[in-house]
Length: 293
Length: 281
Image (tube, rainbow over all chains, first blue to last red; front, side, top):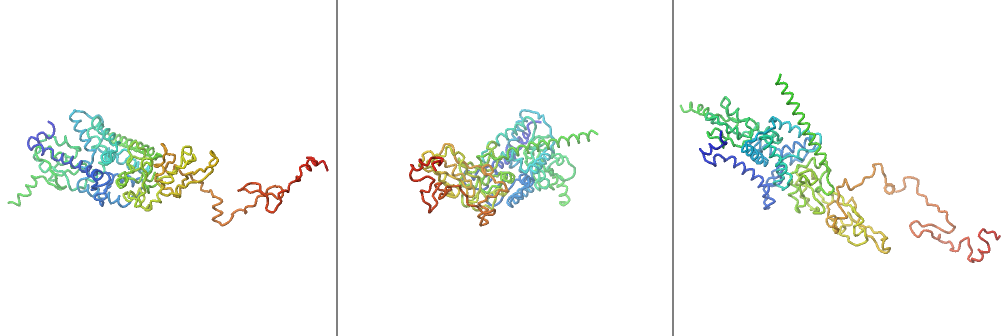
């Protein structure tokens, strides 16, 4: 197997083989850019940071993990924080929980880069952890908040630190991202985002209900090149949809980040965005044929 | 069997991991919960422990501070990372009348019931070094007193005798906690290279009487009279015709007495003749 996406690039061109990747980077950059627009130009579209923000001076958005920690720590915040949390939960329940991870979170840029370099250098991770470790870490984060009465995770949370690094210029985040990048590069492939991040774990649970899903409508054309597995940050989510029986083809696992990288690299157009109930295209044809006759 | 062993091993490993992570997090949070003395919280901030528990570290208050004195704490700044603070010496709170940082807070870590900035208690000013304060040295600097937004209430000048010159007055800047908002303007304005007056977090600066303490004079005023046996005039063992004035010149003549009322006559020779022991009789 060559470098993933090369064949797709040959067949469909460079843009086609990188479009979701580039759109994601644009999205991640825009989110931070919008936060910086206010302080830099005085035009305030969104204010605050990824922890909690105010959109157009009216719509609050609050990080659900922070909210969970606050409640576990025995706090009862103002209504604004509850509304903000509901807005975020509603948004990602529609788009796919871990859309945050792949389209918004700045840490993703670092861990993707680490993964790219990891592959380029042909490194092997030494550490092995179950992907369910993130749920345990999520539990630890909430239990600590409960026992200490403080959102203790916020002393270390790389997502918050990265957000404050980029939006408020606090350099502590730089160290956190560097350590995280090195961890992913040297110790564990896709270590942080794929195995440990408690925020990702929380959004993964939201993904279980999201209507927007990547699916494999054209899975009959799959030539088993394995490139999708290679680029996927959560490769375990693909198999049930790609190799499953029955007409349903959507990736239902909540941990699919809807990043669309599999759509980019597939030279057979197997993947596409669709709904939870998307069906294979050949099944669709079978359905349509009787109508035509 | 091996499946069950694996399962138990995994479970034990995960539980250990959770315990370890929780323990480390807890330690960090405990260690980091102490607010360093130079860091002041924005107006309306809850008690420090409650504040760090309720703050989502979003920076909305920082963005809404029109004078940009608020800052989110970086890892090494001291306060819990991501929480807002300001440093009086480099930029004090400007005491906006509409207090925009408070309604910006989405969680209530900055208490929305604070609507009057004079009721804010961000810290407490303390004239911490009376050896370098120019006023304490007998000069007339007065800068902290002049810049205080609650002049003559939060800081007053208390007059006392200048012992060094013997003929001047010391105008001692004196902070009163019932009016000091802890805005930090006095510390910011102090003309010394290092401020002699500093605003400290209240829990550091303020003493507290024992709950059972009662101040006699306050109780007396409240009750409209002495609560214990009434004060008795002190009886001095003084020569006849003499009195003692506590608050004034000390030994005084009782009104109406004659000044020559001593055991000794006006004529010293008479005394000599009489002899010291009075044996001349």
